[in-house]
Length: 483
Length: 134
Image 1 (cartoon, rainbow over the protein chains, first blue to last red):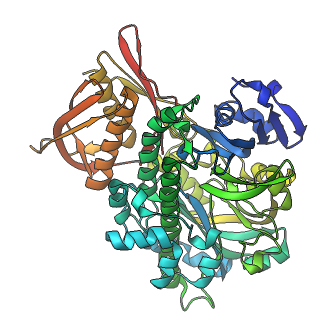
Image 2 (image 1 turned 30 degrees about the horizontal axis):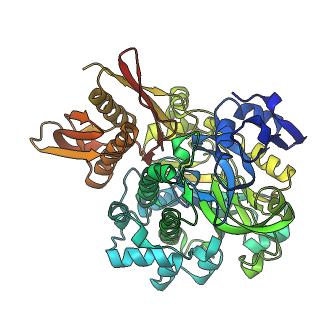
């Protein structure tokens, strides 16, 4: 087990396990955390998993871990690892089964006071329009040709179908379309699962959340994003559904042999990888990008359905009920990016698993309105607690491969949460706090109880204290829909 | 048959410790344990039988393949096994039994992982710990 004494304290918010800690490490582990958050994290295997991740061939710089870290499988959740492109490796488990799981935020000009009498109706409408739950099917059933287009075109497919706006695309990471996606690199089984699940939320920790803009820390940035004090927002958290799960499963399975072929030795079979310049590595990249584009479309279709729910609820009752995109960002992805490491600009494949890209001002991929302020970083809190909108910074480019946190991070296992909390009680408690809850499963709701998560405000304080993000607004939840 | 699985504490996902006297029993207990975690209830006595066969390069790959197949059947066809007989030899598995529509499915498992996955034999008993992504 790793102890706090194994760390070198860099400052109040940064800690390091040096490369010398274990013989097979190819770089250090850099953790962003307060002492309290770090001590909490040492209660599970997240730091050990980060140390294991440093053994990936071609690792560049440190494995970076965010304050919302917790134990995952193979990689820790909240981990960032960069590998040399194209001589290093890509690890599907370092991206996760839910490829391009991410968050979208939409803003409204609906004042909370006007919405209050209609929140119950809004919750019902969102629950009605947006399919959720285990194995949920959507209203879009695609043949192979259409699914292929979704894989290659991403949100541009939705735009052509009249299901997205130009603004939706502009305000999405990579404009909702990763180049190099190839459905031919995807198994028939994955395609089968993908045909009917587009436009569905799923279950687990995925949700729709209506919030209220409560605190504004950067008024100019908030105004540019369309976030108005006291007005409603909508957050969508989900990913690539069974399509992405199957793609990752297929490649983790096939890479079990690839590591033997390439003579790669790893401390955990879930870390299996292949050289980026190998056929296996290129095939996975092409399949992963197809899943990423699918996930962008999935969140787009859910936004489309949510717009119908808002129209049903508010049209004719408030002056402007429209939902305008703030940003859509992934937190499970492998991206080929350029970063400065040891004074040299290098091309790397950045694995972010439970970590969000957080590029600072001046990044060319940003929409023109965000060019000067930096990229929005969306940080959902646990159910019933605050969520945050942050901005990427110049410092994140130096310290964390342009990355920041992705949420609150769990502290309590699902089994313990279920023992401590009853879903029905939690629902009643949150309803008593003025939060409308709709959930497909009461045990599932109990597993996602706020006490199972870290204090998101502490997580945000840490990334802002470390300089890898800065606060823009804090959102208070008023409606939560869970699958 | 006595229960040969127990849920272990895991911060974010689900973990299951499984044990059995025979290797085929280990695969069977793993399937039952996964169904239990998911809250699967299968309509019994349908008179419909299904057989699935697969092979893999080692026992762990075979276990992940087998459980992944059950997840696929649950998600895509909404069916599960109400009875299950398994034979495993030389990394080849055949599972057969009565299948029925899943009447209740409480929670979603995204995938069966290879995280620290190692089937071991201790004191004449096969054991494995499986982590599921949820």
